[in-house]
Amino acid sequence: MNARPLIAVIGGGIAGQSAASVLSDAGALVTVFDKGRGAGGRLATRHDDALQWDHGAQYFTARDPALKAVLAGLVARGVVAPWEGVIGNLGPGGFTPTEETDARFVGQPRMSALVGALGTGATVYDVEIRDIAPRGPMLTVTDRHGEHFGPYDGVVVATPAPQAVPLLALAPELSGRIAAVETAPCWALMLSFAAPLRLGFDGAFIDLALTDGLLSWIARDTSKPGRPQDTAETWVLHAAPGWSAAHVEDEAEDVAARMLAAFARLAGGLPVPLSARAHRWRHAMTTRPLGQPHLIDPRRPLGACGDWCLGARIEGAFLSGRSLGAAMARQMGLRPAQASSSASQ
Ligand SMILES: Cc1cc2nc3c(=O)[nH]c(=O)nc-3n(C[C@H](O)[C@H](O)[C@H](O)COP(=O)(O)OP(=O)(O)OC[C@H]3O[C@@H](n4cnc5c(N)ncnc54)[C@H](O)[C@@H]3O)c2cc1C
Image: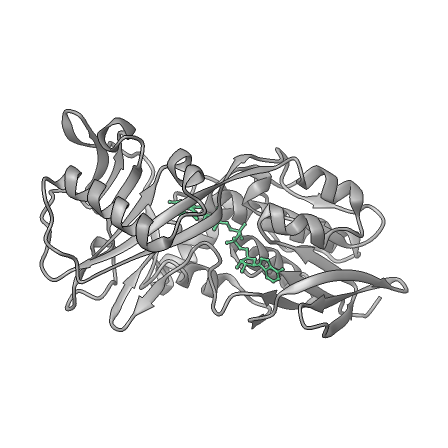
């Protein structure tokens, strides 16, 4: 093993960057590979000229001490800020604001800023890893064009569960466990309007009966802190898991039209939007998680983490990445500097 172990992390979402950060702090040299074109994973932000939408994760809460500690630093740097919008439930009786005891946080000026600020290892974008193979006691990774990287002393797989299964063919006892994880899709609609809609709230969980099971969440993206205010008003809508699953193969234009019509019914009419674009998240949410913080091969530094380990949330992905990073550091004889966390093994 190298004096400073070389680690490849496959997947640069919050789980992968959290693992990279722990391993890097413990002394490893980490390279993160992500098939996307920018930071974030499902903490995603779509741009269109001066407009932007958080079309994946909407906000997060922090209960674990490890996340709270990191969060304090990110808030101080202005990378994360509380979202103090009016949020609640929209039902047959109208809108009811929720009494939240936990603050809701968002990345600033966009959700993906959180992931960008967490990562410490060098991140290489637009590289889709297809294979992990042994080379002596080490591991190489190969991208979809057949280019090899490494060898590495250790490899972290931090992709959504369905993509982790083929990557871990080398460790069938890990991939077999991950194959039991279940995920659900989500259609998201990004809208912009020339003038404010003035619905009286900034985010609402929708009673499914109001739109025949179609919409589950609507949010005024421009109500989040640090977002551009001098352009159009932007909204993000999420379709419910059942509707998204039933329509997962539909054309994006058809989905956009149906989601917009449902929103118009809820709002009692809408002006014609400046733009309306639907995005399909095939593996948006984990519906049956693994039930433990990470998986690691006892024979070599090869492991997997992600929101599918502990649950379908940003906090779960963060804790899973930290947990695997610390376990792999210990397996390689490094001393992880991480604070204790309720998810650590
Ligand atoms: C529509 C939607 C709404 C959500 N709302 C919320 C919310 O309000 N609050 C909340 O807490 N959570 C929410 N979530 C869930 C949250 O976004 C996730 O739990 C979290 O972002 C998962 O992080 P991750 O690092 O595990 O995975 P990801 O963010 O998916 O990161 C995995 C990364 O792996 C990369 N990748 C995959 N395969 C490969 C490969 N072969 N080679 C290289 N790279 C690869 C991907 O490009 C991706 O960047 C939402 C998710 C969606 C989709």
